Image (tube, rainbow, N blue to C red; front, side, top):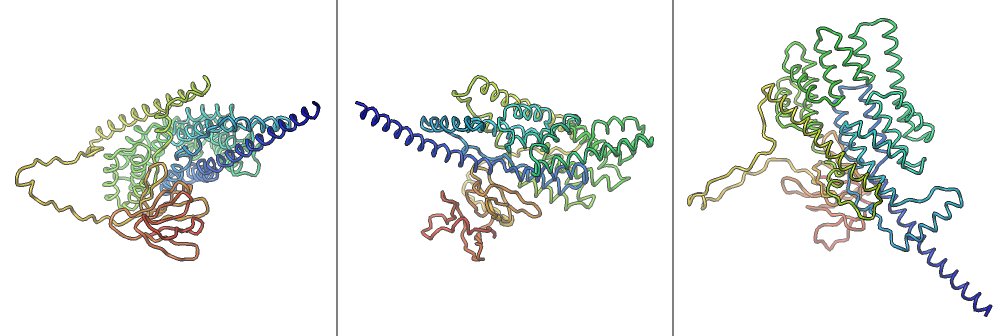
Length: 517
């Protein structure tokens, strides 16, 4: 009887450890896959690079339009791709393995592993960053604070990103004391990281601005000098208040006023000022700078074809056509946001808790409010365009309707030959397409190059590369310098590149270095 008992106990323990081992391996594989996909999607290193460029532009080179276009392109590729691969579906065996792992972690005083919770964190981070990019700083700040309170791992990339970008949003909202707290915490928790580096850079810019402001106040400098110093330090609210005390503004001061209004999200008011500055003939340099702002607003921040057409015509008059071409070129590389469509179309999962369901619905409501605000600002902008007597360009031109007659039915219509130069059309895994001159591959990163600009994306997002425009061959260049040609290249399930319906051996993923015409 005792032998049977021990044998049964041994069998139960053996079965338990066998199942537990299999479950733990399954969970660890899920964790590894999730971690790789998360890093590709979030691209934290690139986010720090773009924030650094944004800070330099904000404090050092406010009128460098090329830098601003590049930042917009880079930002559109961060946290802006389909998250379908991140959907974790935990089976019963996986949940058992997760329970075993977390039990061991608890005994070792380590935080629990929370894979499903991290999915929700990523969606919230995507939303917060989108609000930040579109200058909805109060909404972004609120969401970052919620993330900071809910992220369990205080030393994770998610926490570092949240603290740093929350600090940036608070700076833009004028709440600098709160911003210092977030930025200092970033430096303390993540010393030596790119997050701490950016937090230190932002703090140094703010301290330098405060120092200059105090010096000017102590020296009792003129409002004109004080306004410019406030603008350079990024204190836009104080800039506007100071300019209000100046009876008659010069053209340069009017430009600073318009820039401050634009940074605070008062786009239509800023556009009205810019249009007046473009039309004036006394200061050509200011007219050029103002017109570039109109080009940037019309192409990136509040898309308006009438405004773009007006500013392109003015660029020709001012001899600044190259700027108009560069901005339009950069615009073609900017990716449309995936998170908005994804969240609004998603059905609320039934397996969420009441609190999680409430939060997801709140995100949807915030997005709708943001879209309504954007529509309101778009309407105001359209009104300004109309008031300034700018020719209206229809946003969507309908196809011309041709009345059929017996004579026209038998006519053979010759389509005009397109003179558009050939480009590469890159299809992404989430359905979006980007036209570019060249695709460069470096490690897990694909850079879509168009003129002076490049869009960085996770390599795995690229599905295919084909010709846009006239027919031609695409050269696939390997690390050894070998060039293979095809009308289209497709990335298969293993990541290797093949020609459509070809029996040739595919080109191994690691060997591919670029695609070009």
